[in-house]
Length: 452
Image 1: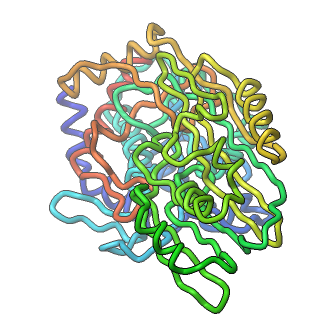
Image 2: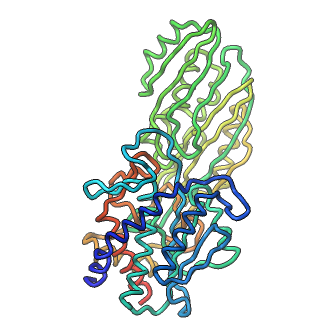
Image 3: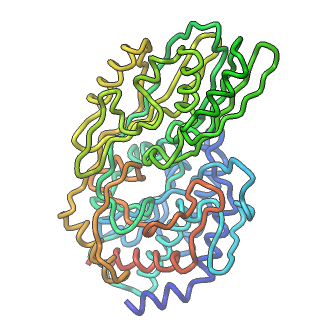
């Protein structure tokens, strides 16, 4: 243990430098080309990681500039895979205190897009394998690093990988949190449409991201008294903020809520449903929609979806809604526990939407993912966590999905710790230097433990 820790901590400057090189590449999904399926910058990040792996003495294979594999001791048979991604989400506003694409270290904290999701953990995984190699730690089987470039937009990179190769029998990803995530709820993201006949509601637009509580919505109303609108805004108790501006016989109402991930909607304030509720108190043109997707409800009860088990409760978010020229469209995000399946969610949504006068169109979804907490693999990872973190290891169920959601037997091992908000997907994303090094030590010990 001390030898591994001394090696990793002795490589601190090198590890931070490698991360800096990757952060500098703005690997947001871009326009696909013949040799870059997810855009130029994700490809550049992949090539940079390939260079780092080759310098570390690993055997690298590139699959269509979508995924690379870096193997140690493949001749022994690959038993363990560590799956990381190098793509990142966009930077959408100006609240960063540093340049998001230049790694900045302040008082032991590393700021930059991708530091926690997932470039920092990817570098930690690389140096864990390099540590095993350089220290000549004996392994009974080989280990494979897998670096992809499309986790944030559907994981189509893994489909490309599966065309060429198979996953090792044991896979973990540092794309979640410690100790071990062994259960991930199922997910359905559905779309619906319909028509609204009203001479009072001109337009509505709210939400842009399908997997988040919308923090902003806007509607234009016609021939409704401004005094009545202001009175209803004054009486509103949703916690959202409303702004009203009258122009002739038209009134624009903007609603500002609070965003939250679709897996934890109770922490947000849904601007779409708050504005629909206000509109219905002025003119009940969206009452059917409010009946099945009411403000403040996050468990899908009104649609007949509410349920829970050991993996948690079902969550339901009305995330996007638009009306233009009487035509409307919407998106609903549901995370459901292991006791239910996609067929159940589709059936309940379809019936509820039909009753409200709308048409269920289509969906994207995944069934729940579960790995037994009693599996040898999970026990090995928990043992490593306990020995190195000095606290009891345990399994976690989440509503979000990690990179291993569709990989049989795959679990998440890192990289977030406790209740710390690392601003993942947000402004000023970070990881501490100490945690980055601790992750590398943990991953090296996990490799040794699982493959010995």
